[in-house]
Image (tube, rainbow, N blue to C red; front, side):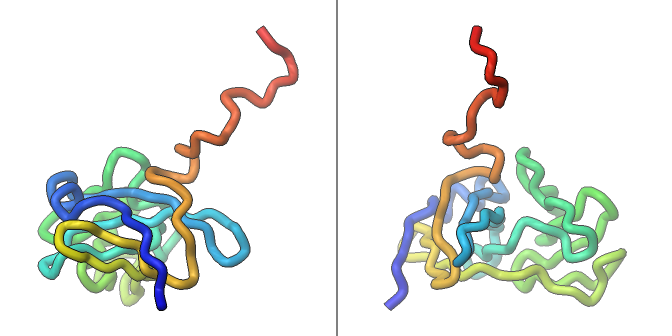
Length: 137
């Protein structure tokens, strides 16, 4: 049975147009995931353009227009429901998906291949030191 981790609410994703969180893969490596509104609820995509590994959400929310996620580097547009791109540098590619489930208004991570690390991007982890300097002030 798939373990569920509650992420956020359907209302939050639809109101904010996207919601970013960090996962860890089976080897403990972090990656970012983008939740976006879809007519059936929400979809979750790895936060990286298929053309040049450009982050789709750079920490200020994903650029979206008419149900499509826009790559900020070259302008390729990915359908928010299918992840498919039919234009630009990333044409004929599909964003890697992450399994999520909506139950009532709650969105849950249900992908057996990853674990939830924290809300926000990789660099937003509160465990990171403020400074790597050995000099204290």
